[in-house]
Image 1 (cartoon, one colour):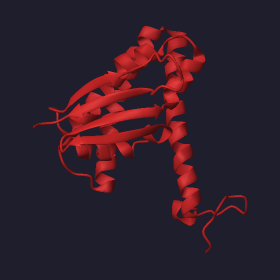
Image 2: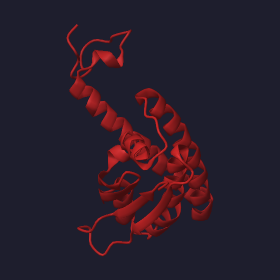
Image 3: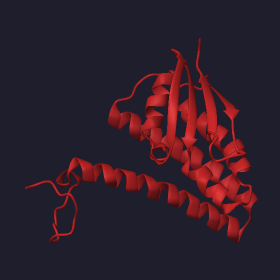
Length: 184
């Protein structure tokens, strides 16, 4: 069977992802990453509206801690990513659904030190569009905890340092910048 570039034809009762072309699979992966991010945003906003922003923030931290560990187990097993250093951590982060929604650069400074710079962040863009100033809370409270949780999966000694975070003066500025330092 020819690989599918879409699913506009007849129903295929035994459809598998492997039936799609590589380009269509890449498009699906991008879409699934956006849906993953949207789900996080929708549930956060629902808790915020029904209870409070403080409760939503606290729930977000707890959920993201749990999901980050779950993600790392699944990603590292599937892709056979092994190790306990910053480079291993960066490799695993590159393939998380959240990262696929952003544009970023990884600059390896030393074998166990890297700087991660976000030049486009879907979450920040949504928060800036909202205009409520929540980017300070999300980026300064949640992100350090989540990055530390991800990093600790590989090595609890990896330090997470925020080098730059919102609010931004201009959308031309970077979104944020993080430094990760492992054992010397």
